[in-house]
Image 1: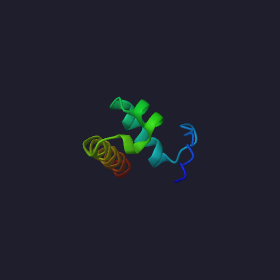
Image 2 (image 1 turned 135 degrees about the horizontal axis):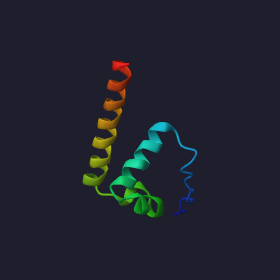
Image 3 (image 1 turned 60 degrees about the horizontal axis):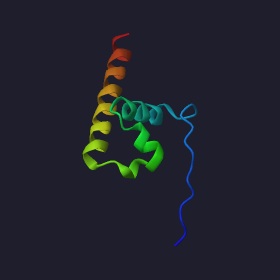
Length: 68
């Protein structure tokens, strides 16, 4: 079975949504593990926490835009 090629992640050239995911992972202290082993290395609890925080931050940004 062929091994997948490791793709280096350029944190400076990400879509805004992807960048937010990596920022949250960094806040939770999970970024090193994600960069070395990929997202699959996280538990479902950890990925759920990241998703919840990302959703909360998006809503806060939307509310700021509405209030302007």
